[in-house]
Length: 387
Image (tube, rainbow, N blue to C red):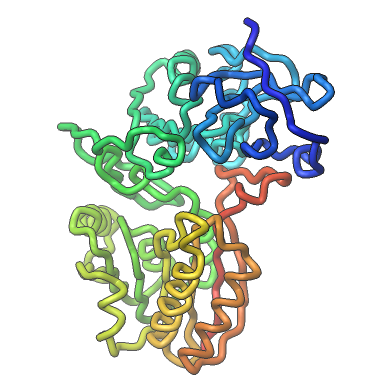
């Protein structure tokens, strides 16, 4: 099939030579604006030499997302190859497991597509105009590899707005929560109404790291969602966990998960806005875990988001007993790790505490990082000792 051709406006940048998969609108010559959103195009350099194949959306700042550097049909067979490669990676990392992120967009060579696996359920997030049009090929490939797959498509991500796509209401279902197992613990996931796709797979390695420190005493788990970090702390020996979240639905699943894991006697859920709750809390804890949502969704919000991270971390640090530990993270891709560390230093100064970082982390291996794309390395995690 012949694809429409768009051209680079100038020389190939070093960023693209290294393997970055995004072409911004100011890097393309005139003419790409006539392409219908989501259309597969051939990209040629300024000399009309072939450069790659990708989806084009002239209404987005990211005008082209590359799928291949060679001429290729982006059909069900292409998706089958990509899915098979992604599955082999997950099987190597998580042998005999059935709960993980199967496709991490650019990290797995399928820009704009997320696929999370929950046993036989597969939740698909088409985030771009291109992947919206390519969904039939993705679904065909998934059903071929997983004959018993139950596919669920969610279109509620705010990222779709940047592509000019509709953000739809969360799908309703008569299905109950899906139970998954990780590291010997059971978690309940609402694939239809829950945050993201129902669980935060990206923090798995960091939860394991937390458990390696064998948290003792009292633990405060802020933005606990359905129990992730708190369960790992309890399983590793914590005396009790106070888990705070604003979502009653999430806390309900966490409470039931605690019961199924035998943690009920040591688990207490608190429904509250974490930002406001921290302003009045005076109790101290041996461990405080802070896993907030992204506070920086777009570049214009960076200054406000940075202040939010500084102030939130400062208040959380004040809840740590002297000699205790503070585990904190940020999932804002627009916040570079060095700047995040500066904000933690500012937070410690504001909290009038001495802090040293004893461990750093990033996203789990089912969220593979493309070295040429810093944007794929978004999750930041650290454990600090607080004096």
